[in-house]
Image 1 (cartoon, rainbow, N blue to C red):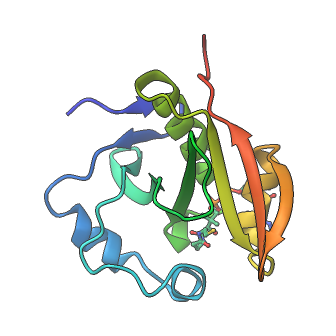
Image 2 (image 1 turned 90 degrees about the vertical axis):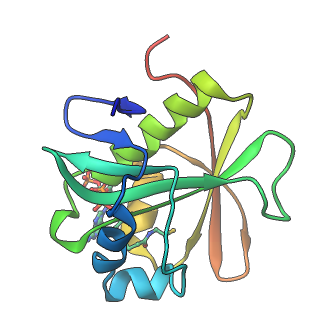
Length: 149
Ligand SMILES: CC(C)(COP(=O)(O)OP(=O)(O)OC[C@H]1O[C@@H](n2cnc3c(N)ncnc32)[C@H](O)[C@@H]1OP(=O)(O)O)[C@@H](O)C(=O)NCCC(=O)NCCS
């Protein structure tokens, strides 16, 4: 199956048969702390693939009450053994590239708990603009743009 998008290191690929179980198996305490509880049959926009192996996922939705027209909410997770290698940052950029090519959405938003240091690092690496916090979470936006025109 063709990748949705890829760079030199990772590829984004639609979930395949068996991936939902792999994604559930990859959950850890960090995942539970920041994302749980979630579905037992996850079906994210894309799985993050490195060297043929599934190492995480990236997703977006448009149904949060606070989103404005053209905005999407982005989420991501990388399995513990694969963190700290830039995969989440790359995955968000590739997702936004894919959205820029295939949708009319123009702005990605990230809602991140103020104590989630790793995820805040992703927002910083992506040079997101910070907006007013929502409760215990910090709120960021970035434009949905193609990586290469
Ligand atoms: C958040 C998460 C997806 C980050 O994945 P990742 O692939 O490790 O992220 P990256 O490697 O792209 O990190 C980007 C930046 O974040 C920061 N960062 C990442 N891990 C960090 C850590 N353990 N401590 C401090 N900063 C960290 C760094 O600034 C890093 O930039 P650098 O590569 O120049 O050092 C991962 O930790 C995770 O799956 N957490 C559980 C699920 C979750 O919290 N999802 C997000 C909910 S909003």
